[in-house]
Image (tube, rainbow, N blue to C red; front, side):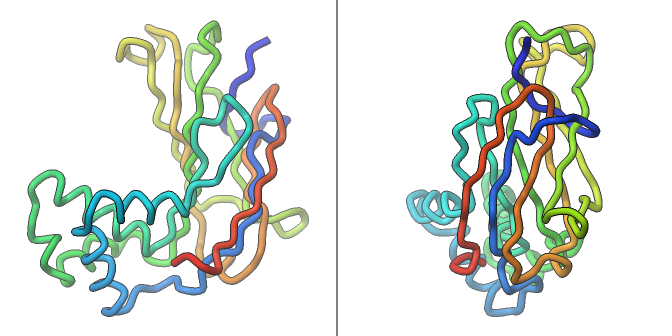
Length: 201
């Protein structure tokens, strides 16, 4: 039986992480300037910053489980633009602020999943991501999955090897509360970790 992770109506919890969401859900000018400086900083500084948002998991099917707050999203956007040579994002808080507009008051849970090499899925299986517990648990406003097939083949023409699953939540609905993050999938282990988001932005 394949041990894999998936999306939309499945049976086992593969990733559960207790978090306290950050107090800030809207960036002011000071936060924007700080994000600009961080994104322009050294590789070591940026690596240390992002590492704090990584949630360790003992499940070998889960390569990475992380949370992206609005502030971290800003840093990621600026880093990406700088890497592609769009230097206006590195010097202009106004330009960077416009880029973050679609992510205002949004909290993203991102999971990178490794599928069993002998799986027979013709397309990505379904999954569920939740924040909180019943009866008040929150479903994502939007869920996305980007599949990766062996050898870069197209969907349905190769073996599904990995997938990036993202659940986008209303940050104002979970702000300043300690809540579990749950990813549901078939034939998977339950993993529980605790991360203190009170020290993160």
